[in-house]
Length: 499
Image 1 (cartoon, rainbow, N blue to C red):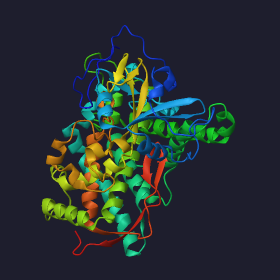
Image 2: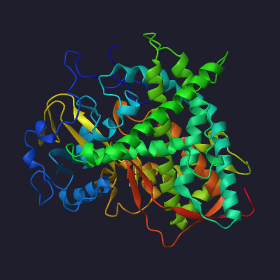
Image 3: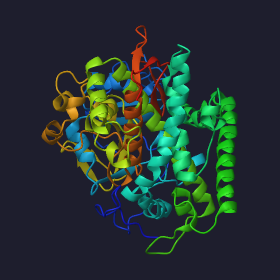
Image 4: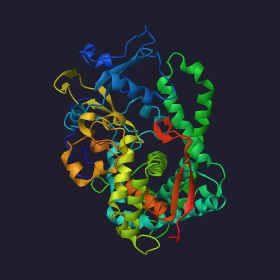
């Protein structure tokens, strides 16, 4: 099927490359193959033969290593490890150039490509030339319409009630809450129930659901494959590879069971959710349907991407709120004013929490839970008027550094300040400087779903609890392709009178 590139909202975007051009080669392409003047791009000092720029590097935190290098080397730089050369970009002007859909497209880089054994040509991991991306996008985009979102809202509230019941128990016992763990349970149940009519029973378990353990295993394995030399990988990752195979098999079995249960229970009317669309809806123009294999891949994609990133965003927001009394008081006052005496908000009331949304946006600015995205040249071009790129050459955009560019965000970009997202401040900034959901036609299809869910949950928690940070805790960021606070706990007290 010929592809027509569309925006995340389903609207036509810039034209795709001419169909006469074959797709760029798949697999990793080292930077020297695509950047004719690579020598002009700075790299860290003390580069070692074959090993490259490994001195001082930490295999557990490659993203944060790259952030530190970017601060020293500037808005475009390169790193080399074991014969692989990468170009990183974070300067706002250069990123604006890479966001031009007529010249650049999504590149399925190493970390994302490492997920293809389980996610295949799902929406997140598909190559641009694979027809199932456009087919799935066009079928599923209406599942994120305003009407669809309003239908998900009651289910989101149901899951939030389970969270607050759990937090009430912890508060009564005087015990802290595990923020990332509980946010992961919340967001997994939310996407599973709203999208697929499935209940994992996460809040009935003392330990994470096996699906979460398998998901974390596959993400962590994909991350490890990024930093292990290819020649050593068969030896170094032998045991981890076996565990990853078992994790992928569990993810596949779980999703197959969910799909089989829906097929067995389907009847007139159906659920009207994402799974129904995958199973029942044909493309409006071509009449094509998703294959059973692709349905499995899309379900895995939504279950993983639909909860992992949102749980991280909520966790970072709660961390910053607990450390920012003035921001917390202002956000809570907005919730009390906008929602009034209502016990739970209607769908339309969530979008009125504009300051709470700023808190989320500022948290995503500092720690976008999908911290980087790759872009490749559709044709020979020049980046920023300075750096020639051949067709297929790619760069990794560090959103964490783009969101800290002092030229855009001021002299103190590390400071947490939700008023950076006041309407006047947003209007004053150039385009393409805030990219927590990627960019262009391949940007996150579920962005509005995630933002509604996160705003709703933050509002409910602020209305119900006072948040108390552990004074000895210093933010640690765990990396497993996505970002998550590590070891974050909070103590709670119920507000009086109870909301």
